[in-house]
Image (cartoon, rainbow, N blue to C red; front, side):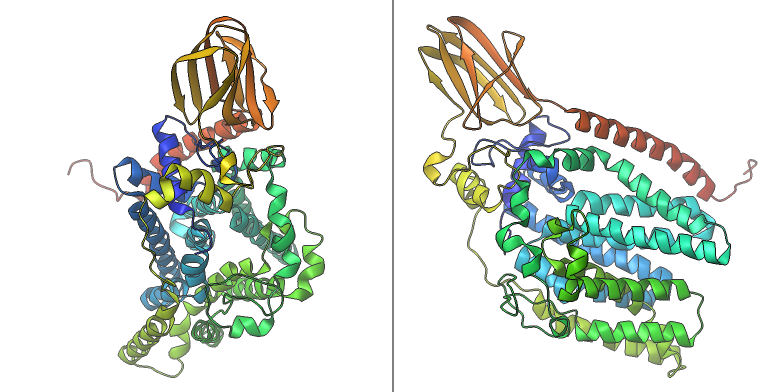
Length: 532
């Protein structure tokens, strides 16, 4: 797979949690052994889940496979819940299978290894489920949508950015509809509430991620081969394109597939036809799904280039074909209504069930070929968590969140070989080094320097003998000057103002959410006579 870093990231997350760091922002061994704030910027939810397994004593590779599997399973479960709400049992089954076995889902898992992206994919159905709402439990339903949005934000930054774009369009359309029809703004207010509350729940992550990203090398994410201009797809590639385990390339040179799947498209068309023929009161959902699908396809094609060039921040999406996530989502939602189209031609419920069972089997049999690894690698955890692997081979794959002025090592000779170097006659008595905390006792016989194998990033604070000191930044590393004598050096990774504000906003939102749970639980309990 393209992003073969997952066991390492899970292991580093577990190590940081074990060190007492929460929320985890800094890992100590990635970044060529000098550490870097990957989880201050890279959506961390799947890795928190995986870290629980590592801290429980499970092997890093086993845990990573379980983390992959859970993300896949959640996609099927949440889409079934949404599909059941829209089209009953068979609506849930068909939509879940379409969503689960979509070719692009196979690309995410077995070609790209994009664990964050397909975890975000799993949470999308919860957002629509909550927005559609339940008249009897309206408060409960919109909270589900907000939690779904929070899941997307904490799973994959780019999918979250695009999801907020679609929600913004949905909000604008509901506002316009209310103005034209002179009706109340309840649906628009609900969508706005979902966006705001989802953002509040996750402010601890996205606020520092957005405000501090300029301090990193993240601009490399949109340069060279990652420039979105090179990755538009052709319309026919969405209908049919060869399966492969390569990458995206300009023109038709791609080594991976972008097809939506013929069977899902047919089922989606049948679902839309069923809605139209049976005059079900879901016209708004028809327009939402069709509009969302059309926008998704349009944004993948070269004809949308002028729009890409004017939307701020969209260049970080990198690949227009990421809109496949949403195209597949809307297709799966439409397919949940396929049973309604069959009622026009098949009156017998049992006969329709047999047909739908046949559709289900066809999806599984035909699309299961997209869910196979290219080969089985004979690797152990040591290939991902050994010093050399973490500090060199894995660090090279993803180093875009290193501090902006940090010189990137060109060879494995430049990685951190130890935790510190000294000049002068300095004796290290003892040291305690954790991912976010350093404590070193030294005896300096002469004036000298100690250089920590630590890339400097805002939030790190340094003390010598309990007095705050400003470090000298030398080639991106921290250098502290010592005078003769015995000294205690302490450093810890603290919260900047964006992190402090984000943490408190999310904590207050969590407290508010807990207060909402009590009334909801009480309201949903059946009435019981006190004399019973």
